[in-house]
Image (cartoon, rainbow, N blue to C red; front, top):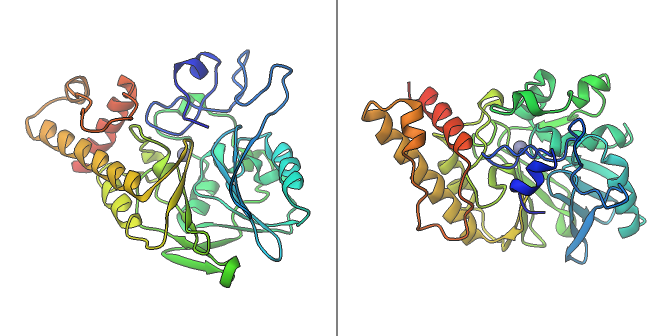
Length: 315
Ligand SMILES: [Zn+2]
């Protein structure tokens, strides 16, 4: 699903997909719920990308479901309360059992369903993401708008059991999954999951869509490093399709452009700081560059949040 704009924000729903911090998916008191049908049912939409790879949308971040020879790998598990509908939807797609979860990063709209899966399965994430799961700090700029920590509420159940730092390979041949870490960006634990046989990569929220990113400095995110991190991820060969954190499936060319978009923003903020501008002045003076067609114009508070994060890093 696309990163929500104003309409969903009005519904009281919050997604951590981009700087606009429309926190998605959490049922705000008195508010609506992301992905709910008219009858209140939790609706998960399935996009078949390959015969054995599906993108499941709704209820938080995009979930990748990869059906291997010995079972199913699930990348990201949506917001708290969406694990059961996710499990039910996967059962419609394959009779094979879920054997593994990969979490792209720590945010609740990507890990919330973990607790609904059996404790016997493998759960993999970057080492910093496991640390972040334990710390349970709310995302920068969305502190007051996120649900209670799902792991705390479940006595630490189904946090990552295995971690990696730079690269990890799971399985071989058609089943092979490569996990990469290229540096900080959205958080300090953004995992890139590649299915080499299918030439598809799941990016999580470090590439959530074509919009100003959420730089979650509470969880190690970096506006100084994000462009370089995105450029490094673009160097992975043999990828044709990229599953974004909250938007449509995109291409390596889109990823390259997104790196430039972030580099452009960093350059603007560096200049503003050099010129002695305050955070408010720098944020207020930001003009959305016209050379990035198809990008969503940012909300002022997301620009301010990112300026603040970068100013903090440039000290
Ligand atoms: Zn996120």
